Image 1: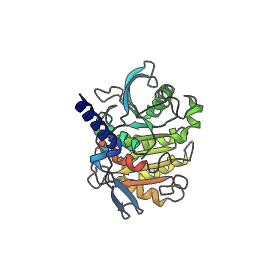
Image 2: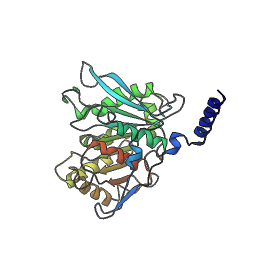
Image 3: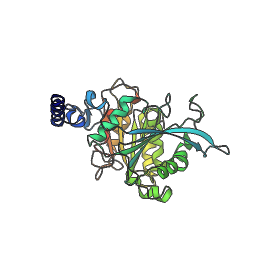
Image 4: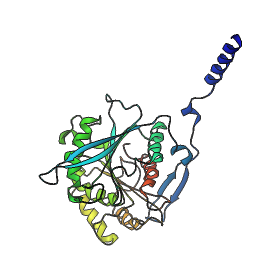
Length: 317
């Protein structure tokens, strides 16, 4: 018995000397890509260590599925679902920044958060302090999500404003003191809209309608949809900027490399950067309102986790 007790004590001492799981894991150095000749200004992309960030975290967040009624499409409400990511240790007594994501044409509400490595990346970014703990909302703009049909893009900003935001921000703790227009406007610095591919096209269009309730807009790997060429799209974006309800916004755009089917958006970004009356290019939200991150990847929404990693150097700062 004494030998057994001695062995147990030795094992306990050894365990105490070993670092905790979270402390024993550490990412390798980022791979840094810097280009200056694509959009006429410097773009910086930090490729994180996938062997760390994509692996399960010691501080996992949770994902909640929420059913709700979309009321902005006519007399009969439409039953829809969305997913909400809550950070590890979510505490209803504290306030959280929030991001609303619009998916691409072939996707749905579970587009990203269904992938373990994507959720792991969020968990690890928060655990490492890359960003503060935040709430991420993944709705579907399709009215028939199973068939991926029935969307009315022009009404999507209204669904966000009238159906989704009040439900989410009355259920979970954000910076909105009240889950209504007044509360959303007062807390706009702590709210972002993000979109990938077709969701990026929609995000470009949402700026003019939702800039009063959000400061941060992140259209990724998708042109504006406002016209067939970069010049026409730029003119539409310029007009949109002139019509903003609140001109204090920041656009953090991103795209993959030459193998990304949306790579031509670099031409639009170059025209925006050249327009120094409307846009100030750089990563300082106090001085700038536009930045572009050019990654090495092709066209897949799962690569958005790398774009997020870079965006967190700017948004909510």
